[in-house]
Image (cartoon, rainbow, N blue to C red; front, side, top):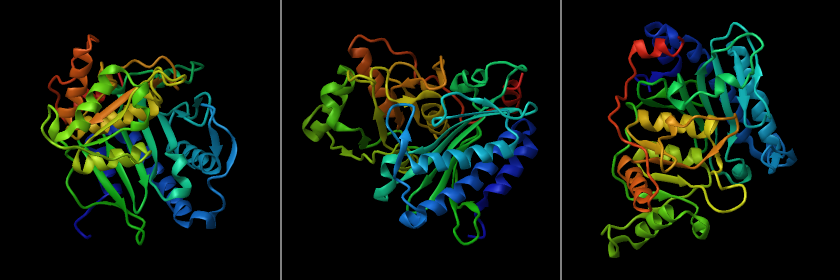
Length: 355
């Protein structure tokens, strides 16, 4: 489409209007190059080798698959080439310093949804870009232990029937699609806007017996449909791929829930705050949606370590609000989730992030 916005043009405009975001633009441009390579590997499927083969053990005890290692290497190379100061990955136990002159720190989940590699279901690459406040010799984890509100940019690439990028620099959320002919990422539509109301929810219902009471009560209410207190029917959509569910919600609304539960290893939630929950929450808020752990907005959570886990609920604001109300009814106080915020960050606020 000749009138579609090109990613490279968009990045040039952002860098020229907001020089404080120039380093972040370089990172996104470099990651787009890595995403093209990952998309090519996935499009060839088994012709690229056994990408789903288990080749080792991951940090959380699950098997590390071949494509996990490949995507980590490709993304790391891209971040190094961008001139970033520090890099953290789900596939690496500890972060690392890169360029001492770099201005940003980049945290990634190189391959979200790797259990879907052999099933043609969507997988993705999630990233968060933070200001790299550091001193020589400081702990390389330090730039990543900032709240999500300090993010300069965030997004994810999704590899499915098409390859797309959802990205925000704090001024709305844009969706770009990879043109396989030209190799360009193009945005033919205006910024994403998530409707406040929805009749779709995404959760792994097989774990109902393990959930906290507020989540269980909320889901039971949805399942009752028109015969229950809501008086309307709801549909379940669960892809076992957070980027897939997030992409759908950005397009037409919905709510996604991955709560904490009583199982060992799930008590504090399962998803990682720094490189999964924070970037998704930033994208959602910039599209008019909400994100919470059930009690506190995700972007207000203070990470204690790079691989910290958290519960995650995000999507259409009306339903996220109802989840918070379910916690309140259960006697578990919830912080204010919905104070008025602009979808657009001022230039002065961007500059303050580097102070």
